[in-house]
Amino acid sequence: MDKSAPARRRLALLSSHLCPATSPPKSNCFNPLVVTNCTSSSNAENTENGCIFCKIVRGESPAIKVYEDDVCLCILDTNPLSCGHSLIIPKCHFSSLKETPPSVVASMFSKVPAISSAVIKATGCDSFNLLVNNGEAAGQVVFHTHIHIIPRKASDCLWASESLRRRPLKLDQEAKKLGENIRENLPSLGNIEDSKGQVSDLIGN
Image (cartoon, rainbow, N blue to C red; front, side):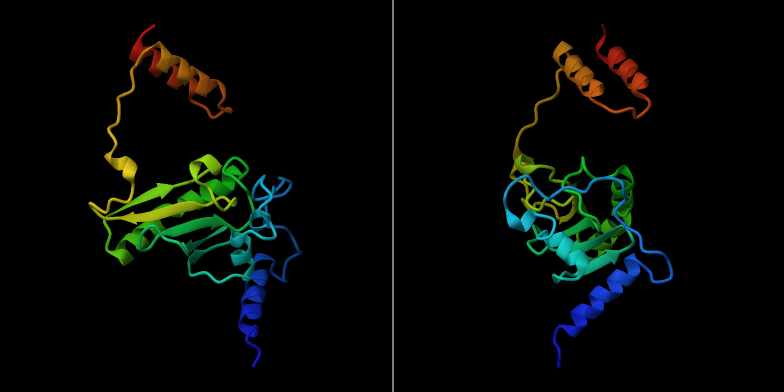
């Protein structure tokens, strides 16, 4: 018996789902946006063809899927930080959050309430962390945008940083300048003038 037959059937099913035979072939990757490599490094496992998430999407690598639609899917992390640790990934390859189209980001995050609720119920946890590691310094290992849903329980001591003392922000001119610098680097998102007024009223001129 051909052991690869089930894998081929899964791949064929996924392919027919992405590109139905009843409609003209088209890309599901939001052209004309350019999809970049997984990483700027030379690690072959993080190039688009070698990307583990792309392989899962194509049905070439095993994964336990808990949700799937036309834009994204959710799988259990193979190296979980806690029981039920899940990943929401886009089906198209984007190396970072910056490279991911806003419509894809919106679609991914819109699934968080339902998926996280299901994970919490299934694991018996009462809380969860929502996490995006964006860039090497932030701990990103697979350079294909993804969202972590990490179930939590009281006193699980998962994050060492939770025991660190946090210092309050000083509402001084330095903080005001930081806020201004962030706003200057924002694209046009609307309501920026409102936020300027709030900051000015808060710390004074």
